[in-house]
Length: 279
View 1 (cartoon, rainbow, N blue to C red):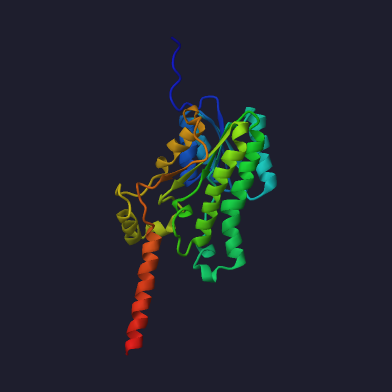
View 2 (cartoon, rainbow, N blue to C red):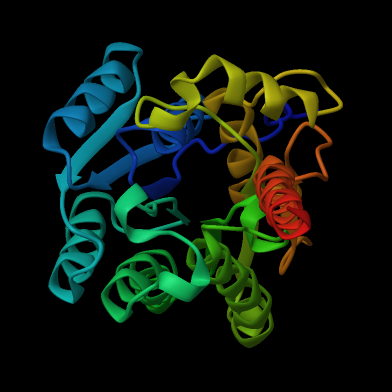
């Protein structure tokens, strides 16, 4: 009997991770390398990319850092070309790049076109074109993993454009899984809950952290290490009959703390108006 291959092995496979040098993307890159994949890390910040690639190589893995801007078509093409030139094929592609600057989100009534476009373009438009480029390169099949958010399926007061973009990502995930399935390409998404990373300025508020934890049945916020293993599963052979799905990684949370905070704010305003009217 031949020796069985370890489960979830990505030995000999090549995986691209956008936004792969920081936060959740860094965790995914490290998990892919631990599973044996050649990892191609992309992103705007050259230093975090180089540092993460160096960490992978120090552990015996193979990593290539490609500083790039995923919102540029020529950079997306360069990522594909460089990866194929180096490794010959792209087996997995993780669309992790995406965010919403505090200055670009707010109540829906006050959003202007520029703020809307900056959030929706980064999180939806460019996720799509990265998906498309990956699929065109996967001539013998492969796996695309989109990083969504619990915001894609829950009310998002004051961050509605971000939630709408992530809902769009989940819709694209389902549609691409149907359109590209006959090509041997699987498309799935991961929707993390609250996972503080180095750029999560709002999570430095201890009161806000406590309110977030109170909405999570597992009684803790997420960690970047909670997402990487699931991304590995979606690229590995063990998920070969899984496509078009979105998996929530939220510690069991179903209550967005932003909704509770917003309703508390609205109720306080209503009570103040009622009190003023009764004077």
